[in-house]
Image (cartoon, one colour):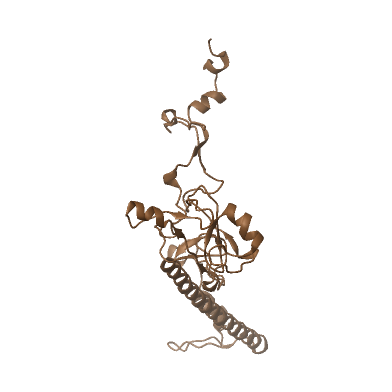
Length: 304
């Protein structure tokens, strides 16, 4: 059966919708694969399997060394910004005081000129002066304010005399932030987590590495499962066991330690700063259609 004429009609002065799609115009979508998603047992900073993991209240997991270095670097940066802001404030106060002094000097010179009039000026070379003792317009003494204005005159047509716009440093926040969630983060709010290793699998394979399992249902933990950590003891369970047992009994199933509903922290799985995670597992890219772009060679993403 032949295709419709509207899709084969190419004698128009503009591109049709179907022609644009074939050329790769518009937003291209592609589902992210496994290699684009961070494993749940990897650090959010170094992207390696975490060592001595620490978790924040939003469920982001870091290596202990990585997060401590990050918080220390943030504190040093905050200290530097505070010092720069203090220096700018001090410089601003000094400039204000200098402006007040210049204004007072200008007012005194204006008052002196108004009350005493023009002051006779004599040349030290010729000692020549008229019968009234004045030298015309140059006989008036130039005030300190005028001298300052002439000395600091800005000529916008000269590159060397172009005025500069001062850069004002705003007062920085003294709070450290989470590098992943961008919320306030303190060291005392971090808590260690403990993953339960599958000892049976380790004995069978004889290797040092083993997969992580849920302490309750013994299901192997992967990125496809939603995980919940208890902030009081640090044990990690799957979301199903958490909703069925932990939220009801208020007791950890691994160590029998009491826990409240606010102590159940959902761990953020997968995703980095360059990839989506959670429900956002589809990458998008917008491409313009224009001459010389070579988009005619680009195949549109296959819908899944």
